[in-house]
Length: 407
Image (cartoon, rainbow, N blue to C red; front, side, top):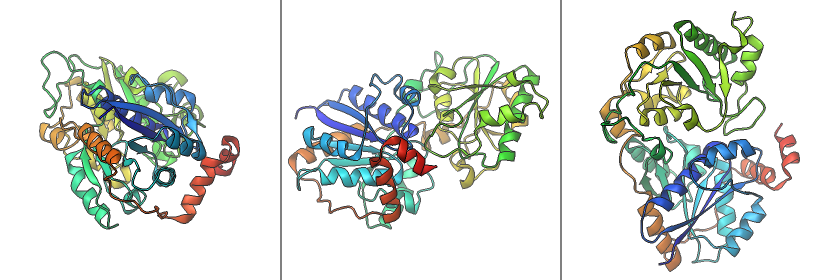
């Protein structure tokens, strides 16, 4: 078999990062046959800005992908038929991509469809699996996710192959100090007391304006303990990202720092690849961002903040049992003591494991696609016609008009 042709289609920034790193892993893992990767972004108001796109692909060796309309995607699939399509997109857009790809291929010669979520994926929701019930394979990134997703897909009379894979950008992050434990054990903290903390900002948590201002105030208090404080943004105020951010932290700081009694430079803000900020001497703080896993993989002190609660609403249930949950007022003392240290059993059962089935699954599905032995896929009926039509319109219309409709 010649090289397996894998096309990844992404929409938002976090999905683009996941797609790019997944393709890079498939390309570099040395399997036979090799993988010929291609990456595109579907036109949408969620599509990353050029700066966000460069950050998403940084370190993968892949170019910034072109942005295609649904029609251009169909033409690409027809002129360069892929064996496998990795659908890396938010639910309604993922379904739109699957419908367009299937419509562009002949019966019995369709590509395999693989999809997943770009981080920790619990809980397995009815909507999340409903939008993706057409998949041949669904990627999970922790052993604890497999069972809930099998159950959730079964509710839709769907049974995609559940494929266990590490979050692909953790491969590059696994640079431990000499003698550090391997994957599946507790990463060894980097030596020395951190002088800098980086908050991995999130659009959805904490949720309210008051809580986000309180977060900034408590971060500024860390400077009283001699720590530099940087907020790593997914996007600047006004830029789109995977989730809408009603109260951007940089805009809130500009509006509130004087009332809080802090100078404007007490807290700094940065964008770009997360890896650029996870350097020796740094500790990572977050409520629930997967950047915490990148930090742990590097052996850096990592804290998952509990100030705003622990539960589904905070997206941090997966970190229960990690050994890294702390309040902000505990951070300085915890860092001076060299911690926290993650629990080895949590690492192995969760997301810092050493299992990766993605390459073998892609190659097996590619062979079946070329042999025409994939299960037939009838036309995908939209999970929600109104949402489907809205997503189709936003991806088809010119970007400027689509953005106006979104506002």
